[in-house]
Length: 146
Length: 160
Image (cartoon, rainbow over all chains, first blue to last red):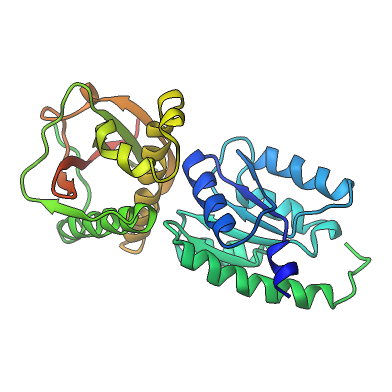
């Protein structure tokens, strides 16, 4: 279990270098070594599609909401409209904390929602929940319908 | 002329909301102890300002974070190497994220009090953009580890 948990492939998407670096460092200190970063929503979409096309998809995506080019919310909607990301967990990690936006993200298919600033402990707690979600997902056959 | 359409009862609560938010941000991100100061921090020429903007149909609110590199330097050394700090725009990036998070907290507070504000991306300016002559209606001073001071202020304007 530990091997699989810590071998999760993770993408951290944020237009602020400090947040990308901090979240990556927190994850690495928790034992996750396969962590990549993207600077904005478009780069995230490119990375997600590329990883899927080579058969090595991301398991977990940390997604900021407000970013240049393509916003995190739009990345979430675009990915949830495709079967290929059914087994990918999306965690919104954002300064947006109004209830209406949390609901909007959950309705769009966000697996979890974290409000900045976030501690390493909060990330660890969330990753354990995400792991349970992924285990349930992988035990469920993937749908063939869009 | 000062433009201010924020009701008195909401304005009174904004100072505590900012103080709580700033302490929470520095504590969670950097494990740093921030204290609120009574006196308004003086703005020096070598300081920077990071400006976050909240906006709705009839009003703009600018939230400004005045800081010096020496405030953020020891905190950022927990994340980056000394060499990396010299070569990259890390101070500006960090200040933008701090303001971004604070603006999210202020927006949530304001919108639960009847506003309909949206948040714009923060930008970096020079210390000459504001200070003593500004129309700020709120100034909150802070110090880090009882040493380096910094200030947050807020100003409202009508939209054009």
